Image (tube, rainbow, N blue to C red; front, side, top):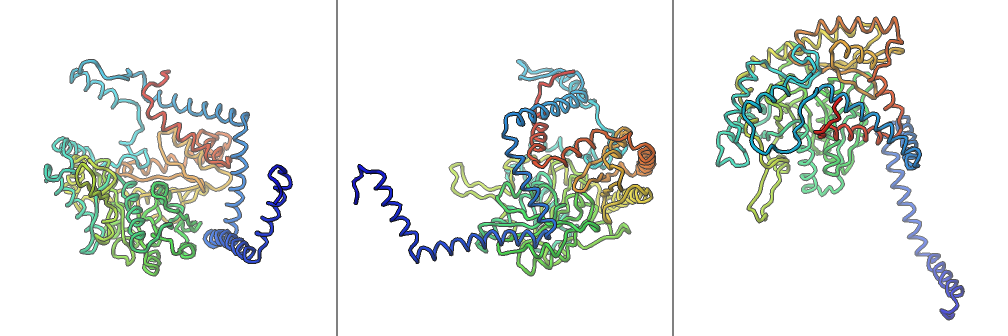
Length: 554
């Protein structure tokens, strides 16, 4: 062994010995095995991507991913970063100015008053806030947003809220009436969705929580019963964003499946190809938010049964419309617990159930699944703690309002609202199909319709022109379209909308240069940006503005 005083010679010996060890036959075999395993791992990921998305889509996604990586590195350059920050600042400033215009020159209150103010002062300010400029939802010019069951029902819900303003279902021994109303509300919705005798459910704060809780239940259940530590859920691209939220919250791999471009339903063959030993659940919509299309729940149910996994049906938007389609004389499809394989359903009572905002029901086929939704902590120093969902304390007043709405409207009332709402959607659909420059997405069966424009017309220009006439529609992307979630007030405005739509399209066809509005600019820019994190920055900035009480008044 050479002296350590000769570093070069010592290093040479170490390198030779290391090389001899690495070149040993047994170690070479291990290295080759590891190399093969790595190749198999990446080949498997690539093959699965092609199998699920198809070769063309997989190549497009790979290209987009590569461009995104390049763009992400470019963003690190100080000059590029400064340019992006400057443009982002301009965009957010425009958003702030838009908010301020709607709010007017109101007095800002940024700290608690030294002394409590008079009831008259508080009520006067509440009235001022109420009168702030808003869209004309009462006359049916706003897509979704406010699911209004009439002023008389609203007055009743307000009285119910007043009666139970301090109630908290976290303490059923203190508020037994609230416990009873929640249980009865869940039972009524279970019956509406033809649940079996084993059916059960929980009331949540909204559709997002209902969906998130279902995903959490399947994750925990299949970890317990199947030992799945790397859970995956397979959902259509058109599924509600709450599934993306659940995937992020609970570390579930989200496998997005393309839809059929004609029917807008999830591609069942690709769903089947995506199922593997880590799959915990499938999901489908009845109806989905973007296009108002119901996926083939029966076929999804067969897949779920074959692989012994969960199937969640998102009926948040279909809510109290889908169960009444048949009796109302409209085309329908199978979607509820009568479909074998369906293990959970989410239904928003605060939409077409006309309950107060903050009310939804998550239903399960049996209590075994529901138990995995619960949060249970037996060794907390504050005592045994258990809650059915995300929240601990919950507003009993909203439960009372939900129960009151269900009882007041009843089956006949919901049947009539179904006739009016879907009838209005049919009127709009017929009008859209009569315009040669437009096309309807798929075959909607519920309260929602989406339509796009045939080239060279830009559908976002159509939306901007309709906004100038007081209509507020939702803009969709991938592909570009406009969406209307028809509410009860639209029953009185459907024909007027069709008339305005025809005039707007005719004007754009005659003078295409009259378009290029703000929506077209925003979505056109978004489509051209390879790194969507920039759009995320804009969205995050918008949310920041929502919590800014000290706006720059103009």
